[in-house]
Amino acid sequence: MRIIKAILDFFFPRYCVMCGNRLELEEWTICLHCNFDLPRTFLWKSPTDNDLAKRFWGKIPVEKAAAYLDYYSQSLTANIVYAFKYQGEPYTATYMGEMMAKEIDSEFFDGIDCLIPVPISSRRMRKRKYNQSEKLAQGIQSVLHIPIHSDIVKKNKDNMSQTLLDKFERPENIEQTFKLTKHAHKIAGKHCLIIDDVITTGATTIGCARQVLKI
Image 1 (cartoon, rainbow, N blue to C red):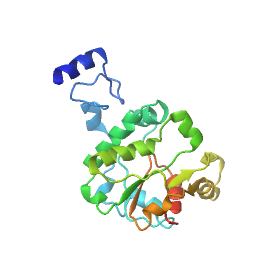
Image 2 (cartoon, one colour):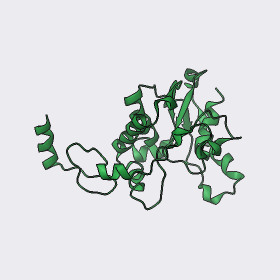
Image 3 (cartoon, rainbow, N blue to C red):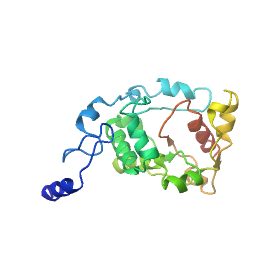
């Protein structure tokens, strides 16, 4: 099997999504050097009162929250997001989901009944062909076997750019874009983990979570 893999790697070389260097046989998506330098947040060490969880306080009831990596524009780490969000590489998102599931303390996932990826609009889905948050969730599921429910919340439209709105208009702008589907009853009484690919203000995650809380 290793010989076959080596032959395939010779004719179809793979490259690190971060630095662009050729991957070794035992490497996948991210080379060992870049993996070592990933800006891990370790927020899962204190999941109830970290900086991310505090963004949701007073807006939605949140039991725990964590982000795997810090995001820095124009950095090598940003290439990961560019790959699965703009360059048609869904497998990169799935791989990152697997990494999260393996590295984040297992206690963080204790009691989680299902994963709910933040949906994208039908227009965006037609263009991209996949939902990157769902691919992240699939990576987590492959390790932890937690069910995914991608049919609970839908996004009606692409919301107006947040930069064009003041801080009071932004939450309303986001919340109006999400709506529960006819399948929402399936998660009644369940403990749900919302999966989003990138969190800045947290408004998108909050908008999705508020719909889930209506169930």
